[in-house]
Length: 218
Image 1 (spheres, one colour):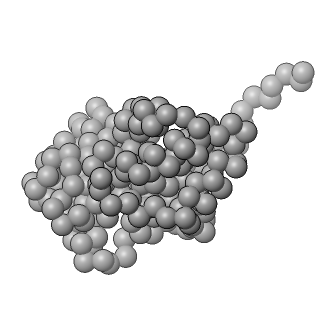
Image 2: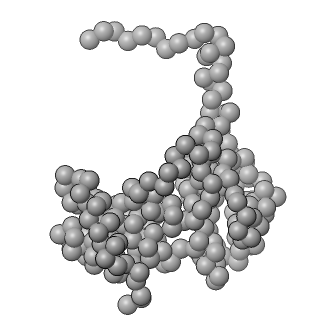
Image 3: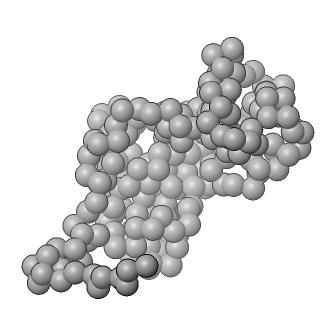
């Protein structure tokens, strides 16, 4: 069995997650994210601990972890690079972005040998107005080009600060996994929350003094 970093502190935090839900099994997905933040993957030890705490079988835990693509079967890198491959991003240059990054990193849907990056094709990131889109640790990098992608990788490799188009400064994939587990990082108000393209309709409505029709009183 691969070595695990899950210790008593992790187990106590898993219990904290469970305590937020009326049914222990409802905590399964954020518990898996916490395991990934500690072990860098859904480890066998993590599966065993979650199964025991929740009161279900290891097979049931593994069934959830293998169904959702955000849970990794192999250790992830420091940074997760997700290139949107849905139609609009692909047409706008997403496929070219993926090919450029894949060749540079020497991986295709996997983790680099030095453990710095995990590259993945991802389905729609709900950011079609900013296509093509790359996500770094699930933070948006909008309107990307191959040249921008090269600079992004350069900065991440060098440890230089990287700010996404929308969201908080990039830290690491494991930090983000801890956030997805429900442990607040204090960065909710950092960075831009919405881009100009997303706000265009709102601005036009304001300029024309438009408003939504009022619903009937119930």
